[in-house]
Structure formats: C-alpha cells, structure tokens
Length: 158
Image 1 (cartoon, rainbow, N blue to C red):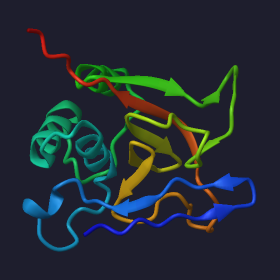
Image 2: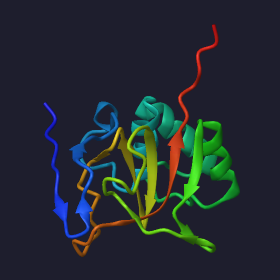
Image 3: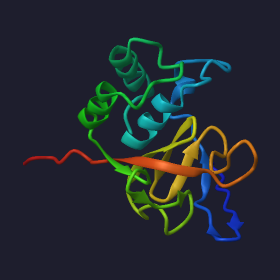
Image 4: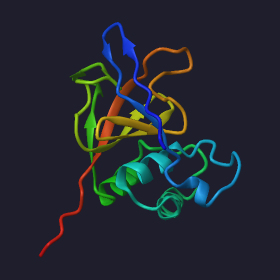
C-alpha cells in the first residue's frame, strides 16, 4: 500500500507525494541509485521499464544513468522528444512564472517529468512520485520548478 502525504503551505496546498523508485529495486539492490533521478523520473512518467530507460539514457549520454546527466544539451532534448515528451519552460528569459509542486501551478492531469535545481522528479495525475519528498529543497523550502516535460501517450492506431 502506498501512503500519500499532503501538506498545506502559506500560498497553497502542495501536490500529494508518494514513494516510487520507478522499478529500480527490481534491478539494483541497496543504495546504488544515487543521482539516477533523471532515469527514474522518465521511467515513472512514461510507464516504461526502469532498465529500458536506464539503458537508453546511458546510450544517449555516453555515461552511466546513475550519474548526474547534462539535461540541457540538444542531444538530450532530442532524446526526450523521441521518448514522447514535450518541454514546457516555467522560468528563463521572457518567462515570468513561479511554478512549484502546488495544486493549480502544474497541470492537474497527465504524466510529467519536472526539472528543478539539481533534481528531476515525476508528477503523475497531480501526485509527486519520487524516492524522497522532493517537493522541498535542502533548506525545507517549497522547490521551484524550472520547467517540465509532459509525456504524450502514444496513440493506438486501429
């Protein structure tokens, strides 16, 4: 059974959080998953097998998916688009939004990978999925989201 945690903040209710390793435990035992947030978030949001995503990220970037990934490269962005994701920026030049893992700040429905300072996490149907409560940064503040990749479910053609 998965337990959801919901928190009220001064500016709005945070999205609920559930523990989810994206299937990593099926392949790796112990604490070997440090810095695999990119791979884990993609697996959770896309519903794809962790090892399949792990191998694809490693092949694309040329380094282990258990290491920090340079997600800002054109090569990585093409990889995400090829996986069926579409990028929505929430900050940057000409973008004036302050988006957090709060109700009303992210789309209510859908599957997405959120990019925050030094971390990626998945949001599925308005619930944060990660191995730790990544709604908060290291200082206990509500984490700001720089942008998110929305997963576009493949359409079955009949």
